[in-house]
Image 1 (cartoon, rainbow, N blue to C red):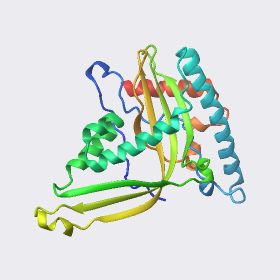
Image 2 (cartoon, rainbow, N blue to C red):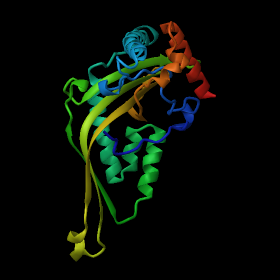
Image 3 (cartoon, rainbow, N blue to C red):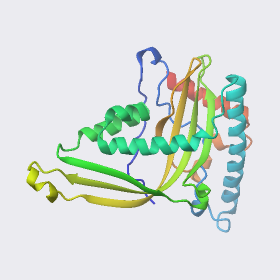
Image 4 (cartoon, rainbow, N blue to C red):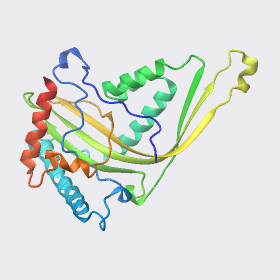
Length: 267
């Protein structure tokens, strides 16, 4: 399955002058484990060691991420709601709104939905359209497979960490796997009213599997709205060589590594 719109590589940009010290596009939190679909997992017969390690990392990451989220919401930021129930609904709404705004050429809406880098990329692509070009997008239906608990959307990662040297501030990233059938179309608007019916719309329909990264930043005690940071890819066997997936890495060590990365992003 393919993604209809390709997400760009992220760049570090500034959103507001008074918050210039904290970039909006901080990148995917290091050590984020995204379990692949069953068919993409290493074979238990051909690569038993890799398969068992992937399964163990999946269970370990899920536990550590939840403990880290509890610490972030109830200890570091006392009284912060977990927002567990709203994650899929937010992903559903922002996913639809993002592609609808892109098709409509609404750059202002995209800047409210997406992080800066993604919004800038969409705006650049909108500006490159010819004036007589019309783009349509439609989500035909969600593919309610077991991989998404028959809902079409499944949370595969939920992580949070505080931002170094910035009191009462942090970032939360939620990755949602969305499986859906989408259609896109492009047509040319005729300059002659009598010939408008002659414009031919080329519609393409595809089944898509997307890993949408939602991000919520907290700035000195105030939460920003959820935004779409971009698109992620599932963890592969090659990714297991990363030091963030090293055996024996404790939760405190993972959190320390995330904070070091966040601190590097500010420089």
